[in-house]
Image (tube, rainbow over the protein chains, first blue to last red):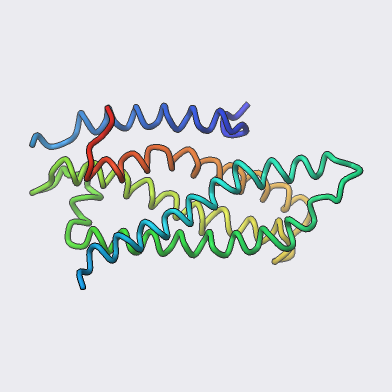
Length: 32
Length: 168
């Protein structure tokens, strides 16, 4: 089943994506 | 009058209108349509499709465009550094963070105008479509709408976090 078929699955996926993207930012961000 | 604060204000108002209606569709209208279809003794979902959905979609798609345009205007000369996530000359953590939000917002704008709106026109009968095409349109529109709900979660964190700090 696609997680996007449920509202809970959508929100959980969004939170996971947020954490992943934050880690990506930490890896690529210029040192300031 | 200062351009940037005015533009930011417009960006916030349009963005709230857009994402508010996005959440309305996902958390209220779609489940309500399902409940109305399942309720055999009830009034059915026809009025939602005829009177509510077209108006909600009108405000939804145009506020999406205004949000993107006012956001692009806000970035101004920094738009290149933002969309390259701060990895080009002169890029800072601000550009990386706001750029991540800008990319998510751009994908979401494409989903609105390229996937949700053309398919909703078929679903609501604004353009002619076969029952098979309408069935397919419902699936694509739902998945695009749910994808935007998903993407709005990191988007709001990065948009707010760029100027005010990330939570983690």
